[in-house]
Image 1: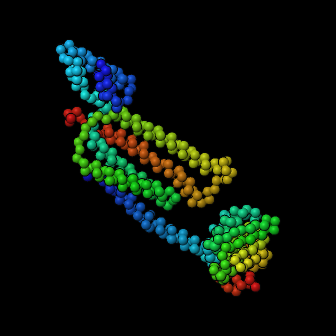
Image 2: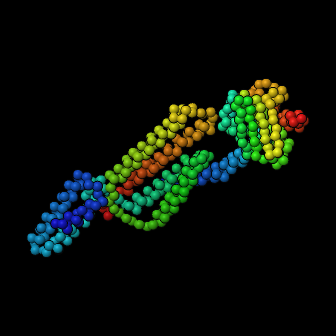
Amino acid sequence: MNKKNKMIIGLLAIAVILFCIIQFGIIPANQEKQVEYAKNQTDALTHDITSIEDYKNPYIGNASNVGNLFWNLPLNNVDMKFEIDSEACTLTVNYLDTVWNIGEEKVQRDLIYNSVAAMAAIDNLSGITYNFSGDSYSFERTQIEDVFGTPLSNLLEQEKWRNDVQDKLKDTDFVEQFYK
Amino acid sequence: MIDLQKYVDGLFRHQRLTPEVQDLKEEILSNMIAKRDDLLAQGLSAENATEKAKESLSAIDYLIDGNQLTDVSKYHLECMQTLLLNCIVFWIFSLPLLFTHYALFSYTGLALVIISGCAYILRKDKKENTVAYLSITASKRRSKIAWGIWGMFFLVIVGTMAALTFGSDIWFGRPLNIDGPYQMANIAVRLYLPLLTIIIPITISNFSKILLKSRREYEDE
């Protein structure tokens, strides 16, 4: 067997081993992590707030920014449409599903989470209304600031967010105070 | 005369007509005509004289400068072997692309390894011993052309990529945003892809070197 054939066999062995490690080891593991991450991103208790960092904006007027922001917040697995009132600085999110389908407890917790996140990311957002088929919820900036403090933008730091928002939302009584 | 002219044209049909080759062609034709005239003078019929003149020269490959008597079977086998080796190298270097949207390039590398591997094994089992004159000049020319084309391709592609990526602020009014390893890797991959095609001119250059190594001495004929 000449030198070149030995080189071919050696390189082929390296290539096959590397290919198998990547194709059947690393890539499936990465995909599993991505699926797990995407699943976590649909729920307020497991959401990673750093994913909305790119969508911080001082003004509500940027429709694509608002869309991207909400597609990166909990309930992003539910189809939605947006209406922006630039003069009143308010936002309406129309979810194309029913509260009953998603689960009332989850909806109530996720809506508080989304409101705090959206108001922390968009400085002049003064109120949000969420519409579902048959149900509607509204949140004012003052109401959110009374509970979480000002300025809300200070909350968008991972550790602070986990302690001051995410952990508090685990408490059902804390969530219910927004719906009395 | 027309018969001999056609015959000589046929002998040179695979040659590039450089001024030197054209001179050689004219010399051969005039020698043949002289030979035929001699034979006619000796009393042979026109048809026989023409046939005998043709028989005096059945190939011209060895008369052309830059042609080399080559062990064609060995040359083809070594070319297949080199092609396989280079396909494996291409495949290895394309493996990082499996993590990107360009994974197809890596699968193409795998397919090329399989195809060239099968072709090499089939060629290896053939017990042929063909000898022929092959042009070293043409082989070197192919190598130069391959590098030239690749060089232009690489410059155009990389230039376009660089203009689109780093000049996005000028063309689209959108500043370049590299705020993490992901964006950095995205740009690097777009420049890495055209670089991978360097394996094509390298392979063609290797073929040229193999041709020189596959020289067959005249006494072996």
